[in-house]
Length: 167
Image 1 (spheres, helix red, strand yellow):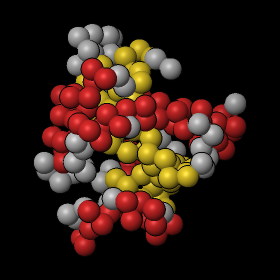
Image 2 (cartoon, one colour):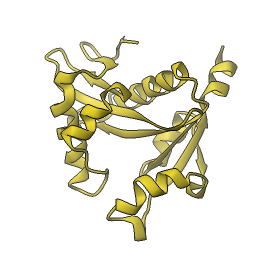
Image 3 (tube, helix red, strand yellow):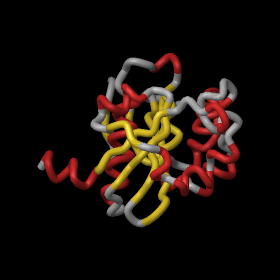
């Protein structure tokens, strides 16, 4: 689904031409140990899982991805908003688009590890226990430089249930 957010900003599925912009945006935060590093190859291999917010020139202003762990469980991952676009609602729009993608794929439960739990709580997520997601710990946490002193919060949302209530 494509949507117009602020003026000429559009949220849409990522395309090949977006890979460099996604990598640059995510890795700008990874350089500060806020997010995990993404290589161009890793983004290319999972491009169908990414959504982006682009301005009228096609520049990436925000991105996010759906990282599937099972047919019913996925992570909201790589959510990043360009620093000069904070406060425009792009993060909220990206998370909503990732949730729509999850629903299309029949995924019931989403989780995220985040340094900004209030942002996710405002989108309907609740604080959860990261121990409930051993797949995430094995896949990403063991490689993370902060793994011993992790200060991220785990947030969780039942998306199919939320959509049924909203309907």
